[in-house]
Amino acid sequence: MIKRFILYLIRWQLSTPILWLVVRNLGVGIGSTVIANLVGGSIFFWVDKFIFTSKAVEMWHFQEKGRCDDCGKETSLWRLVLAPNYDKRQSEPKFFCMECSKRRTDELRSRGITIRGKSK
Ligand SMILES: [Zn+2]
Image 1: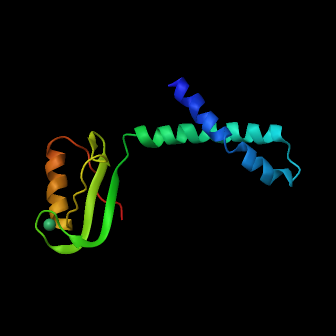
Image 2: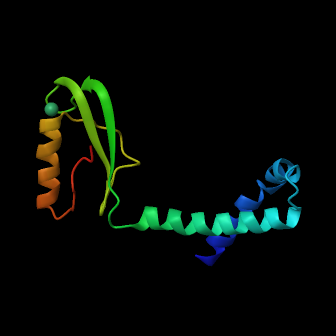
Image 3: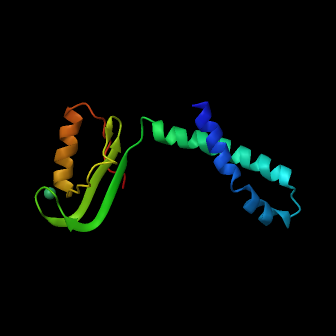
C-alpha cells in the first residue's frame, strides 16, 4: 500500500523537469516545483483511491446507436460496467436497450447487487 503510494509519487516526479521548464520563466525554483508535485501527487493519490474503492462507484457505458445484444432492437444502448460487487471491465462488452437493461439491472438487484441506475 505505502509502496504503491511512493511509486505514485515517483511517477508524478517524472513530470517535474517538464513542469519546471514551464514555471522557470515565472520565477519559480526547482525546489518548489518538486514540492508542488509532491503535494499534487499526494492529493490525487487519495482522490484516485477514493474513486476506485468507493462503494458508490457505478460506471455505465453509453452508445448513441446500436443493436441490443438481447432483443436486437436498434436504439440507444447501455452497458453497466462497474457497480459494487460487479465488475465487467475485463468482459466482452454487451450493450442493451433501455428495456433489456432495466430487466437485467432488476435481475442483478435481486441477486443483491446495488445498482442505483443510469445517471442522466
Ligand atoms: Zn433489448
